[in-house]
Every structure is written in C-alpha cells, then in structure tokens.
Image (cartoon, rainbow, N blue to C red; front, side, top):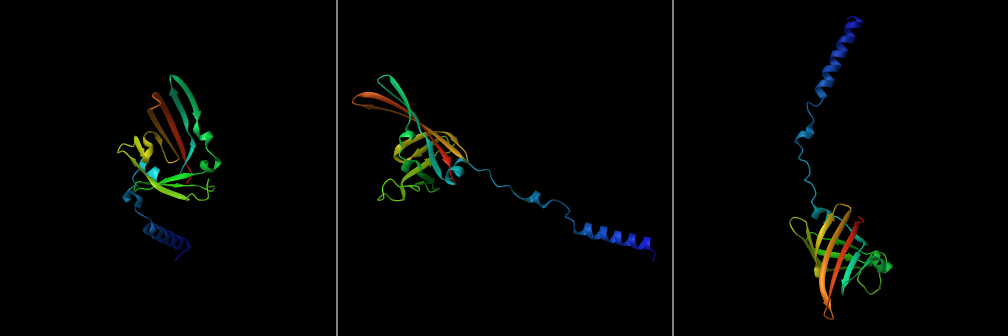
Length: 165
C-alpha cells in the first residue's frame, strides 16, 4: 500500500473511531432542574444574627428614635438563631455568654411563616411583617400599640439580621 493510501486509511479509521465515541446529544437535556428556593428555605438553612434594631416610639405625642442594637451588651451581639423546619427556634449564645449559668442553646421559642411569606410569627414576640428575606439577609418589621399608666405608646421596630452561615 502506498504511503498516501495508508495515511488516508488511518485518518478514516481515526474519524470513525472518534465519531463512534462522541456523544450524540447533550445528556443534560433530561435533567430536571432543582426547584427554586423559597424564603422558608432561606430561613431554615441559615444562621441568623441581629445586626440592627432601629426603633421609633411615640409617647404623649412625642416621638423618639433609637437603635436598640446599640444598647445590647457585647455578649448579646454575638448570639445567633437557627430556625428548624419543625417550627422550633434555637438561639445560641455565641462565643461569649453573658452568664456562665445560661444554657449555650435555648430552644423554648417557636416560629412560623405564613404561606405567602409576608408574616413571621416569633414565639411570644408576636407577628412581624417580612420586609426582606433572602439567602443573606432578613428584615422584620413590627408595630406595637400599648399603654403605660394609661398613656398610649406606639412602638415601630425593624429587626435586621444577616446570615452568618
């Protein structure tokens, strides 16, 4: 066989071999994509730490604003919460406990989120409007009207969390 013919037969064999091993189509067309995560998924997959609590309160027609986060002790600022899908809240004291007799984790509170993810109920603290709930941050808002000594009090609080997971 001549050299040119040998090269031609080798090239033809190589083309047949390579095309026989090649995928006909992309196999990923049959893969079902993962469902999009919901706000509840973000909540239960995170470790949430408060970063700010701006509050406005009105008493006798006088309005004051403060960020109550600034008044927390350092041992409170490192606390974080996880929200189990079972509806339990686990609040961890973080690296610095305020009192050595406090349990590291408290799980006495419960939580729930309504079906359209706009209302968040947190134990005895009541119902909050969900202003934001993403994979990295959560912002809850609550208005409480009460009275003290017969005088009406209006308190508006936003609690801002970051996911530290």
